[in-house]
Length: 244
Length: 244
DNA sequence: TCAAAAGTGTTGGTTGTACACCCATGA
DNA sequence: TCATGGGTGTACAACCAACACTTTTGA
Image 1: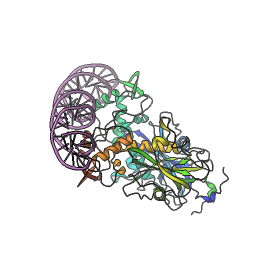
Image 2 (image 1 turned 90 degrees about the vertical axis):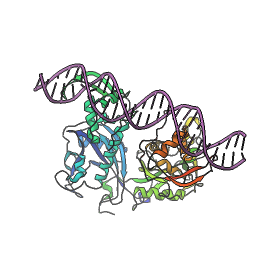
Image 3 (image 1 turned 135 degrees about the vertical axis):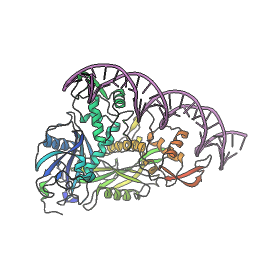
Image 4 (image 1 turned 120 degrees about the vertical axis):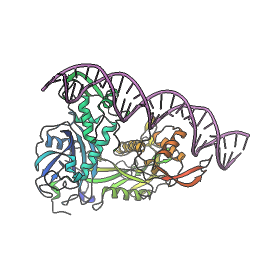
């Protein structure tokens, strides 16, 4: 690729890791895969893999996402770069710099295991992060590498970003009701919101929601209007997260 | 460093690039260095360099910052990771992934040139980005590599971050007046703010400012109280950027 | 008929903004 | 005494939280 001597600079391995979040059963869940080989064999980790020589970072992330979940970005899901992790000791094998990406996806069918992973699953983020003395979903081991920190950073990004952007719609199917969108906010923030004020707020913000004309009763009760995500990406005024 | 075969993964060069912002002469300025060797010889670029094998990304950024400016982080200045840029074509020599960092610094003495840079200077970001048909500070060439995009991303991050955090104080000397802090906001956002409402807002936000007891008349007019940055990092309520 | 969820109206407190006004210094 | 920037008071408008109330379905 170049006439340069590779020994003139320290060589790094570069990977992408994915924080894939969804809302299922009224809880914020993340995709995790069980590692099939050392190090951390048998432990849960975030999906990811090496960046190839001819692809951009976001292309690598989209490729890994498709390989692990069958999900294509730009198909309702949202993908953005999260942060980069490069502690010299983060991988015991070699010097690896990982560019973490955040994916917000609607509730998906059961994940497929791929590559070097024995299995894959959705797990509530509280479980994966070992909050409240919960175990980590069957064993007490935290996530492999620094993936616990990466996941925590991704969750915090998602929590703050749905406040001032319309990204919460990325957790919803193509058509959804105001109540379904509200349950997304409640799951991500872990709070209860007033249905009446929420309804007024989201329908009053221009460009956030576009009515499709249809209705549904899939949540029970009175039929609810169906909406699609509107073109607006920034919410003004923002959705205010209640005090803790 | 490891028993692994380096040919098992594609090797990358990893660098840190720095967006160093300050406010001088009532304008938001960025540090740029003139390149002394190809590619882009003679063009302006952001300071930066290779990450060493034994250092973390933030350590590498702090080291480069000290080498280029003599500035130590944690000495009033703020350093945070910005984003990572890894387009395969971004450096014509080889595959380079650059982890950009953002530095907010008080007005500094003239920068020192270091390393492979012929010279270094502060320039208004509007000039460096070629806004409003301005040239790029003496010649019409944009910044080298993708540094124009990196700088634009850093400026946007700074503009939004002073809205909901106390980071604007990083642009001020250790002791400063409310008026000086207001001029920082005005320079970064490029707007005029009401001095009366601004005063009430910042002094009313607990933990933002701590009075030192001293006063100064260095801005002329009635003596102004001096403040230090308080412990709070998140502003609640945020400083609202006026509509465009 | 009842429970459940959708949606509207109203009210009262909080917050932001605009701007009149006073204060303390240097020139 | 005047210009300059620092700082306080106040009134109006916009906004938000709380909650009573009506609507429309399935069971």
